[in-house]
Length: 113
Image (cartoon, rainbow, N blue to C red):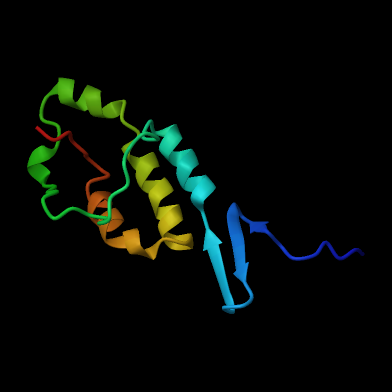
């Protein structure tokens, strides 16, 4: 058996040690960048708030016409929510409120009119 030294990464999370401050941090930066690219959002700008107060979701936004249902069928809404939930559970509890709100509409999401 051989000692491979300190772990730098585990399950896609980078391990960052600061021995002087006695801190250990986990980072999913590469994972977040990968899901942003996967869903075509790599050029979006970061914001300070995880969930804007003006952002409102309601059942009235659910698709009503066949055209709306067809449009939303091409949007990977559940996949996006699942990716966000993985990040939330592992290293980003700060996004829990926003993920919780948008996940309520997974069964019948609609576009904002």
